[in-house]
Length: 116
Image (cartoon, rainbow, N blue to C red; front, side, top):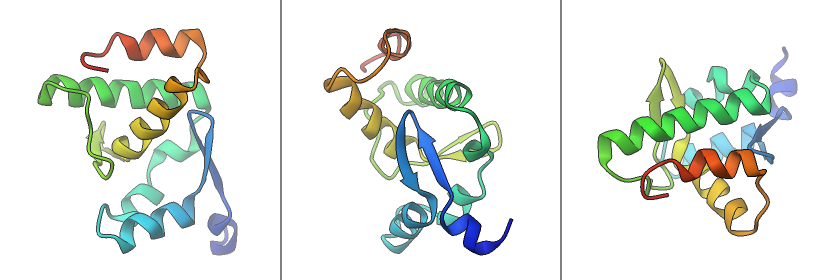
């Protein structure tokens, strides 16, 4: 895949589209996360359901370890040898949750997590 193709590759995070290059540059320029780690993550090649399940599992891992699911926006979680931009994802999911834009199945999955 050429560099220009990657620059315009769109990723779906629970139905919210982000331009990978813009997101990585935004995060990296602000010192939040290593954009290279997020951009090279195997997460972006997953279908929506697999990606959602992976992020839910990473959220459960974080909640079990920290005792809360209140995640800093810039937090990156190491899950199964992959860097997950969990803080950004949680923010998008919370926004969609408040606007009733999640499927009932997804709502049930996130409500099982402590302190959601």
